[in-house]
Length: 91
Image 1 (cartoon, rainbow, N blue to C red):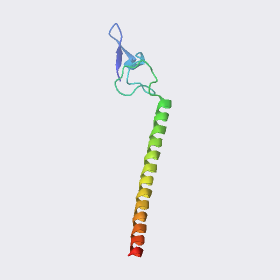
Image 2 (image 1 turned 60 degrees about the vertical axis):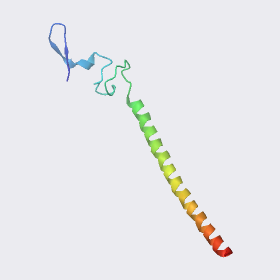
Image 3 (image 1 turned 90 degrees about the vertical axis):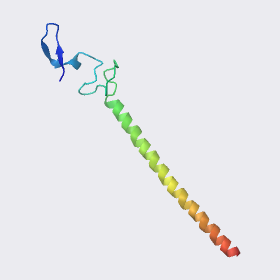
Image 4 (image 1 turned 120 degrees about the vertical axis):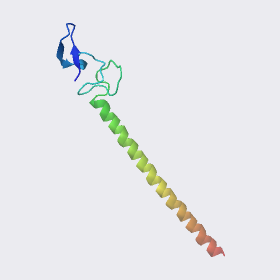
């Protein structure tokens, strides 16, 4: 807890962030890290939900890519097998 020092030297019960909109220690929404943004809800719940959606979408895309690579390697192996069978029939 940061005490807000008043002009006469007494400390008020509110934390220092209570009056400072660019403070980085807000309890509910607030900013993360030491930023000087004047927007009080810079990384609020909506922003976090959209970041989480992008995170899930990136996981989904990478998993599709991995599955695609696995299927591609299986196809390449099948092509090699077909070429081997075809060559053995010719010889």
